[in-house]
Image (cartoon, rainbow, N blue to C red; front, top):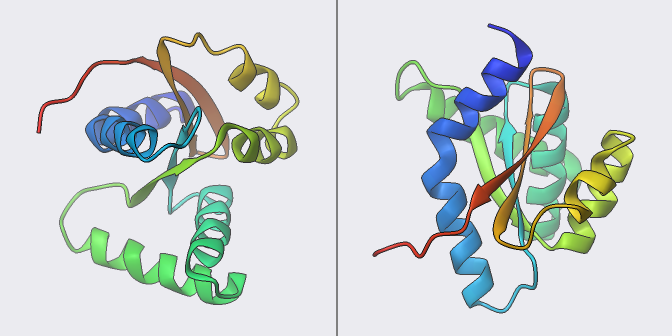
Length: 139
C-alpha cells in the first residue's frame, strides 16, 4: 500500500471519531481545534502520541510511550486494524508540531478554510493535511 493510501485509509476508518473530537473540543471552548490521527505503528506517529499522552497525563515521555504501546497492543487484538489514536490539539499547538514535521505543515494548517475541520494524519513515514467538511453531528 502506498503511503498516501495508508493515510487516507486511516482517515476513513477514523473520520467519525475525528468529527466527534472536533465537535466536543469546540463545545468545550477550544478555539480552532486541529485533529491528529496518529498511526501507532509509524515511528513519528507513535512518538507524537507518546509525547501528547505524557503531557495529558502529566508523566514523562517514556511512560507516555509505554501507555501508547499498551493501547496499540489492545487495538491489535480487535482484528485486522491499524492501531491509531485520535487527538485534538489547539491550532497554536498543532502549528508548532507541524512546523517541526514538514516545511509546509504550518502553512497547510493556517490556510485551511474556516468551514473545514483541520486533520493531520501521521502515518507511513509522513503526514497528510485534510480539511473535512464541518457538519453538525447527531448524538
